[in-house]
Image 1 (cartoon, one colour):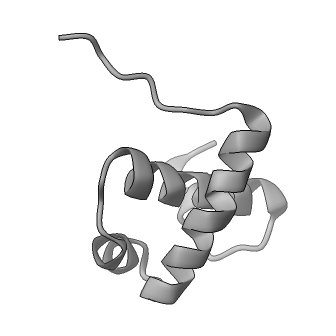
Image 2: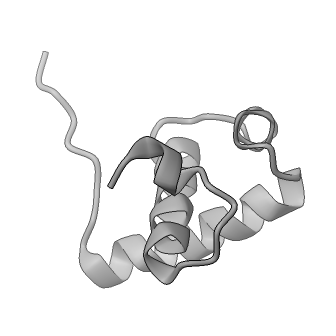
Length: 71
């Protein structure tokens, strides 16, 4: 999947799930602010908050997590 597909405004379930997962990982795992994500993804802060919650569900259901590099 290409980055532009994840960031697209489309409603295809695969792209929507990927966008939600991106929001969750960026906010919860990387500590990005919802305001910053909203600006970058051209969404509202409320929309990002919703996507983070839904992305958490996607991550849990599929056992996704970021791998952290060892120092």
